[in-house]
Image (cartoon, rainbow, N blue to C red; front, side, top):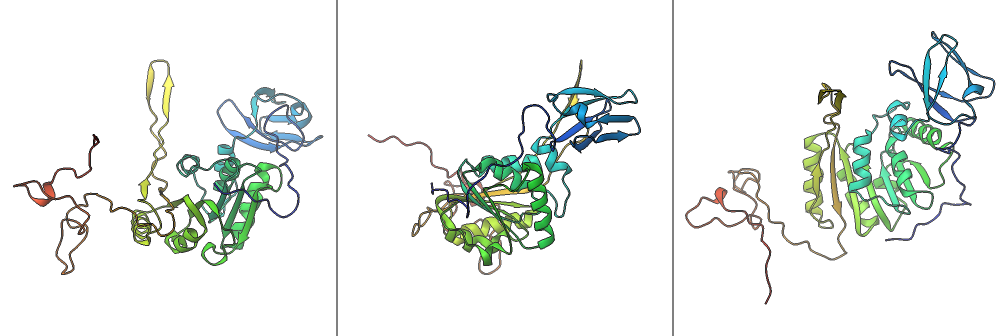
Length: 331
């Protein structure tokens, strides 16, 4: 693990305190009996107004989370601070946000840890940046690269709105990672961009041995391209590609069933670990689909040479038994 390096100047803590009584400046979600949510920022002397009446902010300030407040119209509102998932789904957007289900998998599968040095390509609207900053903590470092200045401004506003001010572990650069990357000895690289394969050389140069690359892409063609390019590059172990589906459930007495709506495909994730310099990875034994890798003369083949299992006696090549070696015992 590389040692985290501080940004220029002294570090300060972020202003947002996500616990304790409500304070002026806090964001608060007011939820009505129908589940409709309104988010307000508490200010002394102000009032929340709706067609169901008003609630003075001073009534909320000083109360604990989970309190109920009655408007002048008689409607009761439940008050909580927004969670990071709430902030992500309701933040102002430039680019599409990374959904919480995918952000959680990025933090877990890319093993983002407190104190890690992480680079991010494609800050977008700042949703994933918030999750990464929460994971690395104030003693880690996240360096985000965003090509579009308008998206960078939106991302900066969303991050600072959630954390209550500039985060001491974050640096946002307007530019492309492949051309402007300044960091070295990086623990993790997260690529949320249209063509992540363009950054493989730069990321491989910056990552420490054992470091992790994680790409978030939208389509199967992008997934295929990044996986094959990582294999061909030679600096990474075998990539792992997957997606996550989220389905909620309706639970009401004996009526227990899946909800009619679910969050299905939002994106694919591809992870791969950086090899030590000068290391040639072992040939991966896998069984490609017939015709997946055409032969030089253009005819369909059973797989890539040197990358398939031999067929059993009397069996066709595409019916060969699994070539994955089983456990061995040494005498």
